[in-house]
Image (cartoon, rainbow, N blue to C red; front, side, top):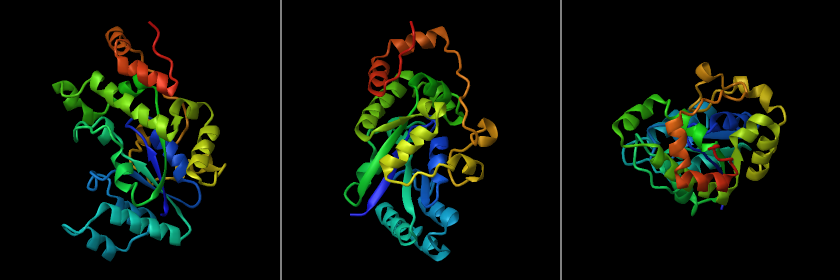
Length: 263
């Protein structure tokens, strides 16, 4: 079976900038936020055609006909086109659907992209992480999350269940922590390349500003072309207490090596 590379990541975990560092390296084709249940959110076929010229318009039209598109078939075709041109295909997972879900779906707590493709490819995969308290604070600022948060259908405890289960996946795959990346980007990105069996390009930081083929990049707001530590938001006492009382939080921190909040 042919090799396929997958990067798992949750929303607001710093994965966009880390994947940009990988994607801007020579010979890498990175398709972004790919998921079997998200064909019409971040369509991998459109990305393959518009970003990399791997499909013709006729092929795209044909594959997108009702009852024609088949997720695994599409991935196989794109991988074949990459291999024929000497490129390495990397899929950036949209694990938000699997481990958080809202507002789009109910989480299954399983890496569906991996399980769907595991029988068809020899998969090398790795995960990215961020401190759970900081990730929660960032997630709750997203406009798309306001309705489920305000209605109560999604809350901190549900997030931490998904985060803990995602942490268990990270232990299985190996993982890169966002905080380590921010301290010295070259070391984690080299580890990422080594794990995925991709040649490391030490000039990646010089290429970031011109790399546009990725989803989830709001650099006009966050300045994400620059590798810099985002300001840490203070945690309100009530939230601090609720986080510390959650057993999933403590289990996840232990799995990923994060320090728990001080009492």
